[in-house]
Length: 346
Image (cartoon, rainbow, N blue to C red; front, top):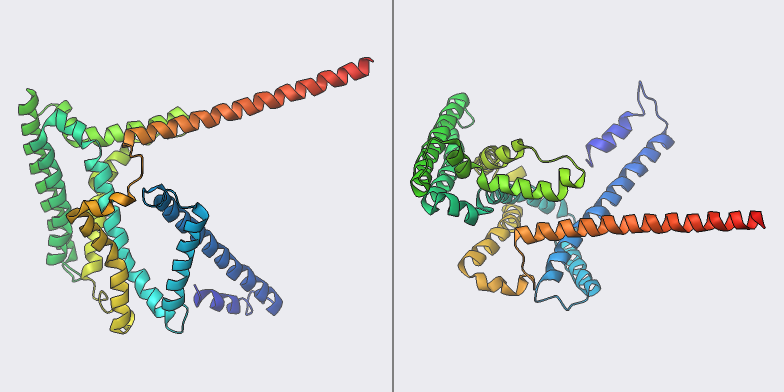
């Protein structure tokens, strides 16, 4: 951005554009003003999201929001002042931007697995049994890990990449299919149904994610006057997006630039890796000692169904308030009209 755009502004002064220096300066001012405003907007959104989570926690629920946001901004300012606002800050920022993609891909993978396989898992286990649920989940995890690993191991970045892709896809489909068959057999035996029936297949593969889709559509879909989320969303978030994200993650980890990005000094590589992998350290601590985060849990915990219900109630209350306001405005207008008619009559 900071190289290509100035070059583009400079090129506007040549044929066939022939922009004047004043016009190009004006465009440059507008461009950098846009960047500044985008940066401020991003700072607002980042600070608001983080401060809201902290404010809802038990530890900071009594701290004034203004003081909390002030501390967050001060900490961010100090980090930026030490790490980025110097002659080598662009190198540090560039490496963090490169390595943080690993974290984002991993988080996206976990979010898709949570939404597609873990949500409403208790209700699904009651319908198909614990063995069937673990079998289906394990087959998806194994397939999403094996497809890119085997494919890259055979093809990699060589001329045999197509062969690796084909073998990886076939292996992934075989593993997932075998797991689904075993899960359906186990679910059928637990409920006295034929394992080839569509009901068993639906309960094993789509029950939980379709329940989630129905709940969300009931709050913000057609029930709220919007477009409903289609069945395609359930299929993508459960079967397609997780292996794609895992493929992108393994491509990132096995690329030649990982660990030597941009030819920067190892200090910058270490800084980028440390910042990117710090969330994984927090995740490991939460898995090993969950009690460490008890103070950061909201005072009033709620299930997903309760959160959706609260959202629906808030939307209904907001709609009722708008209707009441409109009725009140209409009543005031009628009173003014009636008063005017009285005055005219007098």
